[in-house]
Length: 607
Ligand code: TEU
Image (cartoon, rainbow, N blue to C red; front, top):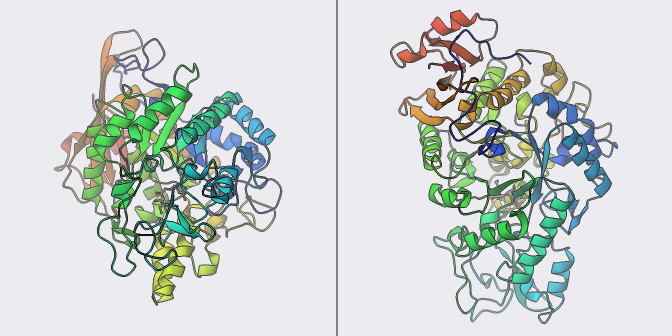
């Protein structure tokens, strides 16, 4: 790995005042960690059935070790009918045969631990599959002992079960249509915020909570190092004294359905549930664990409380504010990104969690289109540069960065041509719903192509061979045709590659306490093309003497050059280029040049 060049004789901060770095009182380990997300179905297939699996992941661990990441977050591998690619679980303590066996999972854990990496599992407990034995029993009869483990309600007052609009509330499912499905046998409906095969668990019931805690302890005892908690801020619903749930506001006249989020996002008992989970599952464990709660609709103030160590709930949350900026209410109505809004959002979250709590940082995951296509420029001219630029920005913020598989290779969105190529339930349901409303299928497909979760789910591009080295069989979803040029093998030994740049960013966070812990200050909030900020840390040098570091990060988020001479004079003639993206140029030359090339980013040391 190429160390960042240094021309500065000034001593660097190696220990932060609150003890970051080795030693007593150290900041939590995950403040200087980078997490890598694996979506098992699309990572690597070891047995040629076209579906990625655990042995496939284990066979590719050197890629992760080379990248230098600290943690792997594994999307669900539990037993599942795979209606939502594993986010519909039928047995929390078994591995789905499509992915392998429990022994394969143990081998993966061992392989990670042997390389100094941790394994974080996905915890999907807002809902189960409708094939989970708990739900099968719950559905079997209104007098079943597990009836109350889920949300069963009769039809709307005065309406017969099954009549249009008779659902107990008007909430809209995240995957189209109502959130309620009628069980003909009992004449009652069950709640599912997602697909009808994903019934919501009733967290009001203490037996449900105890069963979940027990299962979590079982996984920790088996050696896993934490959990990413799926839609965990949806587990507490607003329930009236009489057990009823209320309609959502602002129903869509076309469907009669309302988002309903105000009835179930960060509901009245959410902090109790998470604090109880922490006490029951995590408290007192000697291991270094990680918890991150996925929380759509969470505010900065909520997040502060969720992630304040004093609250003892979760270490960090995934918020959605930035990924909601480029659409108009619905993800299917994309609008161009407003860079000023993006900067304002990041600035608010950085400031909001500066004193209490902690941020997670992400551009991509298995639900989001690829960042280089979304906010970068995936044309041949700017693809690598824009990927490096966006990566630099994200990784230089304060928080824990997450890299989604293939992001480190600048993998791009797929050129969808027909609905038949799509696999994702959310996209397919939306296409069907719009067809039902008589929408023009070409127009709908064009919008789905931009936002579909399947953009993130095409196979990882390992090499230039027929199926990109992902499988020897027929892949479950098409391989991106650009894999001949854009693949890991082509980038591995190239010091100018996007992959090499991610490697440097990971190393920087490990080596520079200012990157992990420094204060954040946004600059030029009103500039349309430059994203700039500082990071500053007071601490001690290697000999224990007081020292301070200040980094200035400047990035040109666009395809035309920008002159910084008048805009940000302090960016010209800085002491040291800690990391840059202009390959093949002399460091002194770059430091003296006020002009940022298209999509160029620089990390400068100014003090
Ligand atoms: O996603 C949560 C979530 O809010 C999604 O509806 C998200 O907004 C959507 O995918 C964006 O298009 C989590 C998982 O990450 C997702 O894969 C699951 O499908 C979902 O929960 C249900 O478990």
